[in-house]
Length: 151
Image (cartoon, rainbow, N blue to C red; front, top):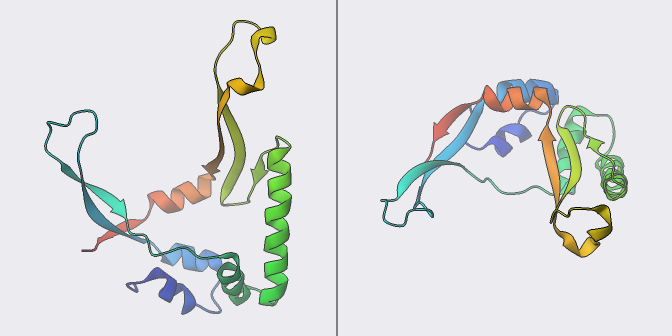
């Protein structure tokens, strides 16, 4: 396996995305020293942390997708941009957005509780966040991965 998964991904031109995901079974991790915020007297411990190899933007994603498609980067970028716009619209309308084998996005709210509906007002909503639920297939891919320690 290549040391850098983005490099490996760029070298798999002509292979399907499914083949790549089946071959990519190694997640790079490093150990991070952290103290217990609940017990400051406890000695810090080392915990596994996934190595961040950076962030890709929509253009890089579209460019990668061209390797599995007959469409141009511009065509794919257009579809991705429109997908982002449509997904945002549906999320704000209160709909979940299923992203195929990746998972589902939805907006969840946290609010103060009240004893009757008349007592509620929208100022009681104190947290809004987008929640991602991975698909069963994607969970299996993550769970079946092995690990490579880096320094």
